[in-house]
Image 1 (spheres, rainbow, N blue to C red):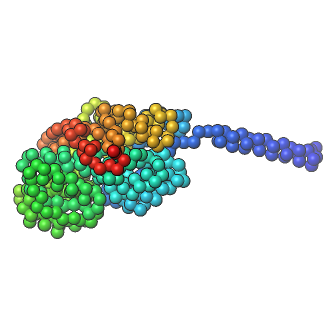
Image 2: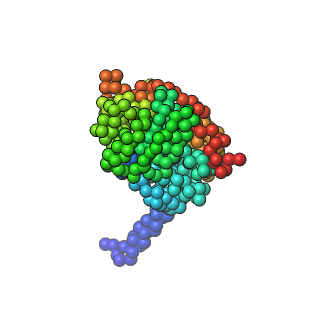
Image 3: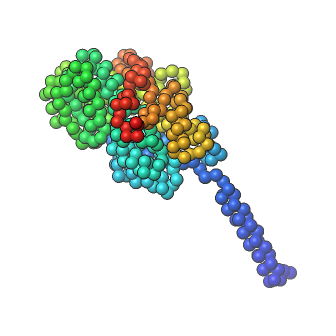
Length: 407
């Protein structure tokens, strides 16, 4: 029969074993490499929600394709909804950089949010790779030594779409503009293209973000008699503009709509009978070649929708960042950025792209026209390629950007 003393000895031994195991676990945890953390923040709700869905899955695809680890460290992906609010975006960035030790933030759609996040990234000496916002100011006055602008910008949209429309006879314009940083930049850059080609801008009207009723704005555009009504907005605002313009018979009356930032998801929402004939610029289309089709098949296994250039951009930016971390042997921001500029960008979206000193990824852009229902062979067969514009022609020359750190 066991005595009380033997019970105490057994308990002390068990406690000692438990403490030893706990100590070993603590040591193992202390020795385990800390994860490399990447954050993706977008307006996952609100006016741009449909555009951004799928970016988290695409970024995770890049992490998985890279092998899930870099420099022996597991790669962890965080995500957050900035609600298209600059203050919320800035709070997320500050918390991620300061508290969660995030090394790179990508996505960051909505130009006002992107400019706010850029300031935080500069302050912290951290990397931000913008894939969603459009303002070319991100590689101009707001450029950063640790920032990049990855997919498109207002200058390229103006040059490719605006230039093509002016050449096609659309030499008088009236703008319907989202009243914040993105819309202002897009109107400014398209105006410069139109005027440089000898065209005229007859006026414009600015609308609040996420407007439901465009009737008064469209009536002003209609009364201007401009040949082209330039839609310097995006997402649900563009969809509502085009739908309500149809209700007013604007296109039937002889004026044309120029969708200055239109995505494949917008075309699917509009449907081909409504969107047919729209000329637009994209950096990616799922049906370009065998590689894009195969990648799209893998993506759709995770989220069943056709990927847009934003989706592909999240994959591309994440993958190239990880390649640069591996090559640099560190996640220190300036060392990684140096490698990002040194290594050509090659992936499903971009071939032989070059990241410039001002943060602009120079890559080919594509001018598409939305197919008519008769031309389309399937639900997702929506574009026909009109032109491939080399990056050196599509993007603003480095010398013209007024980037403060470029001598």
